[in-house]
Length: 503
Image 1: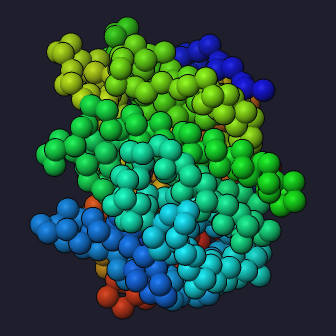
Image 2 (image 1 turned 180 degrees about the vertical axis):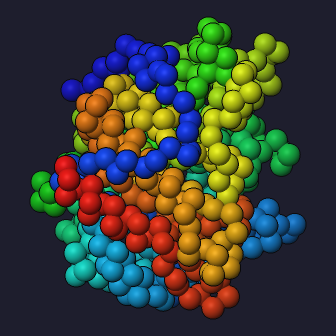
């Protein structure tokens, strides 16, 4: 049965937690977490594996995008990255030393099927790599959580039909790829993710153009409609694969499948303004419920999106509605990527014809001149643990699914040199405050949260920013590829031991 969305808004949550204010200098309380709570680390294939053409791997859209001239990726690419493809056992040994429960990683589609399509040959070397990775994880008592798609579509399917822009073709090819993964790896994988952050795939890759394949107005693509077609394709492809998994694999493999959605939390720029309060709720709907409502509730897109976007937003056929409703009950958890909180205000000027925000503006300072929180190693990520708690509540009340925090973390300034990177007190404080927010959400608010995966296991290729921002709890020297464990990794290891013991 499809679940109904809760009748509440972001303003209800704001009022529930007043008079909470951002306070990075607050002491970490090391509040308890449930005894079965799992902690882990997360990565993405393109960001760490390297081996760009090794052992028969085909090119992905990121292999193409990162080699464009002039460069759109800070003059850098991930041909080698962290060389995880050739250093798998050593990296798993490091994880085991940190006593992680879970490792969330993604499979490179073009390493499994170099040309990507349902009629294209399988690369057995790629299959062997992931088989070995999974086996080594299990040998070290680390559970694999596998993401099928983390932004790196095979270049060949883009060349053939535009990938996400052709819903039927992409659905069929993605289902074939997923079936191969379930068949070859599913006997040892208990938790699957179909897509990582569909909002980013839709907006940043097919409207802003900052991520592969770089579609934007400047290169002549139709930014009025493309992002919404891409989102539509992702939703239907998820539902198709989730149903396939349930019908063919779930019973014998005893696993589960869902999607990972990202999102900031949004505070009204002027809390006394009804327009800004509405804008905060609208941003959450346009960012998260865009995908959450069809995928997790089996419903249409949010009414606010339909009203604002009109014909720009695709419609679901009766058959597709039935597919969504059947698939909604298969999702048994909510995968949540979250990093920061922003203020948002309503704009009075007419929006651009390809506006995707609901005619809003995001800011780091509110109408009273207060910052949402201290800035991290990148300008967009500010420390605001209160927003994290509020978002956990918003998601729980809307979707009523156990939440797994599948990504959370921050970069620090000055981490290029290992001598200064190891003592990452800023990151440790961030983790501590955000874990306290998880505990409060569980024990004070009644939210079910079952795990927390730090982003990221190691410094890596940060997409269009290249090797600049470092999110890792393990430092990587990108010249020598030497790994050095940062203090935050030991902090996480020890704090999870303490928090779970005291629960």
